[in-house]
Amino acid sequence: GEAGHTHVLQWLLGRGASISPGDPTQLDFNGLGIRDEDMPHLASALRADTTLTEVDFSHNGITDEGAQHLADALATNATLTDISVLGNDLTEEGVRALVAAAESKPNQIMSLCGIKADATSVHHLGRGLGPADAVLLAFELRV
Image (cartoon, rainbow, N blue to C red; front, side):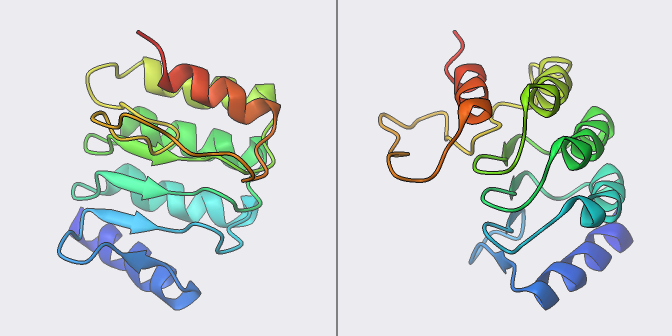
C-alpha cells in the first residue's frame, strides 16, 4: 500500500530514480545499477503497492535471480501494467519466469519492454540488447 510505495520511493530517489512529472504512477530505474541483491526489497514493495502502473528496470545488472523476485511480485501486484526489463543480464530462465507471470495476468500486464500499446514504431538499435531481450520483445509483439 501507501507505506510500501513511500518506502520504495525514498530508496529509489536516493539512488537517482526519477518519477514521471505529473504522473506518480511511473518510476524510472533505467541504468541505476539495480542488482539482484536489491530485488527482494523492491519486489516486496511492489507486491504491496497499489499505485504504480509503470516501472522501468531496463539496463541494470539484474540476472535470473532478480527476475524471479520480480516475477513473484508481478504475480500478486494488482496495478502494474508496464514493466521494462530490457538490457539486463537475463537468460532464458529469467525471461520465462517474467513471461509466465505476465501471461498469468493477460488483462493486466501488457508490457515487459515498456512499449506503449499505441506505439507505431520502436527504436532499440544500438542499445546492447541480447538474445533474452528478443524473447521479451516477442512477448511484446504477440497477437
